[in-house]
Image (cartoon, rainbow, N blue to C red; front, top):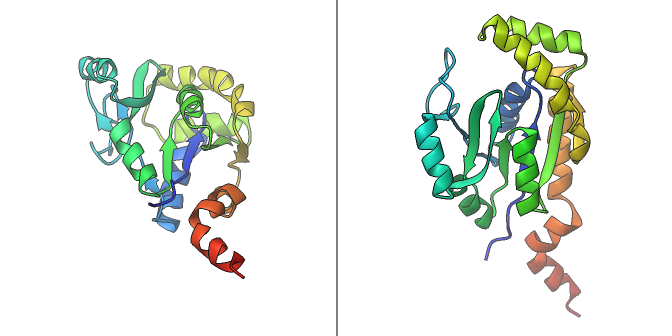
Length: 206
């Protein structure tokens, strides 16, 4: 029987660079499985259904909630977002590490269900840089940008709930920091005791 994988959570206020960091992390370490979230919002320019998100309407999302299909879900910036159970639980059971790119509300729900998960919160280096990044991507209307900036303070207030905090000032440094967190978790006593159980038993034989 394979040892259980570790569930990693990455959260951040919109504009902190979470999505770019996650993509770079997956390119560096393809052994990590990423769960593609469901969302009730419309796709942004360049977003592809099934690659960036599973895009469904509000009615379909509510049906999935009623059918208990979600591992976690929350309302984020007025839109519903969630992680399907079938996208997470079989992978963990097979020993794969899984990464969830979600918000603090979803992270709180996941921690309540999976005490062994590890959570990472990404901070921008300043409020001014956060605003610059939101405006630079030019994907949202002005009212949306202002709402995201206002909401960022409430999101950052929950950073203390996470196991690790990474400041995304220099992208490569932040990526190295996240990679180090994942490597350290894989080498932890709890994980290695499972994954190296056979080796440990052999080495203990007289």
